[in-house]
Length: 311
Image 1 (cartoon, rainbow, N blue to C red):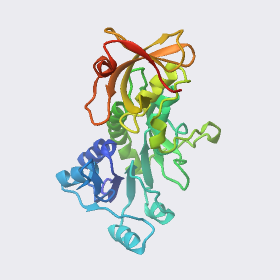
Image 2: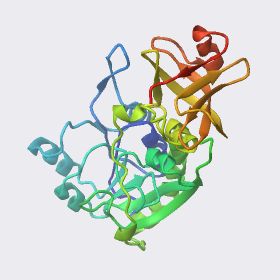
Image 3: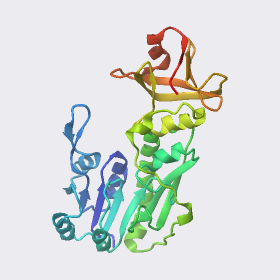
Image 4: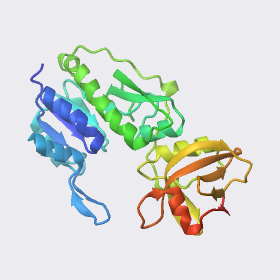
């Protein structure tokens, strides 16, 4: 069944390596991605990464705004797709579309299902202190990431892992997982494992207000927050009515200072937080300024000193 008609559905950067792997392995009849959107401060209309890649590969592209329309249904039916492969597409697919795929609709999800179903699995895995994550190749069924799993790959989460870098690594893992399993999917030689519903955890979409650091929490937890929310929504605290972004944190220490005490000198910048602990600040950013070393930023408030932040 290597001549199956295949559609790829994805939008952001992490979907690009699987698309390239798929296009290299076999023919792709159509690529679906989100419409072009305004990007950046200039709000310039830009195509999503998957569209740019599909153009480079010479593939047919479709960008429906919605799936629950007669026009989208007619388009899909005209393509006579046998199998759909979905990676971070950003749409809930209707049952008629899933049912139309003779060889199934499949999703490469960036977690070890059933852990972290939802929109932000990598962020929540780091935030929760998980020691590993991975990619799951699952068959799509009605319900949020609830389908049976065909295969998984695993990757450790370290104290250096940030969400953006980890997701980029997982995208490459997803491409390899797809290449290893695609022949069996196309040939119908598959063995699926149902997810254990008692082990389900959810990874809801991130919100802008999640960026604010709660300085009553311990340093280890805040360190995970800084890494989990890169590049968005980020991590921030307020200093003299100025919102400071914490882009990189260093080591954690014990501290006898009150939570919210920010101390700096020529050697380091330390923020005392909950649990009798402190977190080292490495890279900061003031509004309208580039990212800078924390000690350089704090020179604005003096060569050294201590400030009690609002907790």
